[in-house]
Image (tube, rainbow, N blue to C red; front, side, top):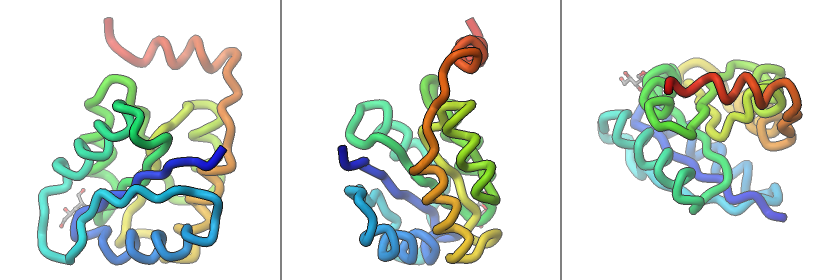
Length: 145
Ligand code: RB5
């Protein structure tokens, strides 16, 4: 089944989002581009909330959120119950975020990782698979009752 992958960034992640959009076009993914579409400044929580709602409403399966460091978008996205946004700086983290944390959003820093590494991180995220089992019990403990 083709993965529907939503992409969104602020101005700090715009260049990397555009590069990834082009590179990922060669893979078996349907890209849902939620912007931004220019390098004009925009407040990163707006993009994080847009993409989180896109995942929660099942308009996309997984998402990639990019700001300058990846920190702001990860903090904002993780305010949404049901969103598990993982800020990753290498492919191992990305693969493990799927395997152990069932992450549904990958956060990247456009001013932190270069385009080659970023593509390897996204590929690892897409290839990763949730292992369930003991990890399911731990996921259930994340949301405060
Ligand atoms: C924007 O300058 C920058 O603060 C933003 O992209 C992000 O890095 C915040 O965490």
